[in-house]
Length: 107
Image (spheres, rainbow, N blue to C red):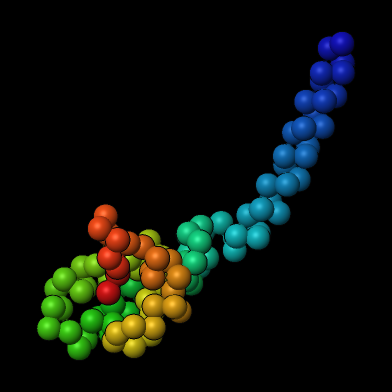
């Protein structure tokens, strides 16, 4: 009985070890560049968010608020849409993050 349990446990551990690295590869290495595991995430590095948000918020009269929320969204999604306005379809995570009231969270 004990030997059957040991064999089953060993088989389970081997299966788990064999499957885990394949899962990490399918997510883009588990960290940098794949949106941090966030569905719809982009491939920016965290330090690239600030200049991308400065570009995105360059033409708004509400620059401080735009930069605050853009940087928060970029930190989560690792993506900033192109242009000054709209084009959110390029970053699904950025587009789908909503406020409690259902409005867009990201500029």
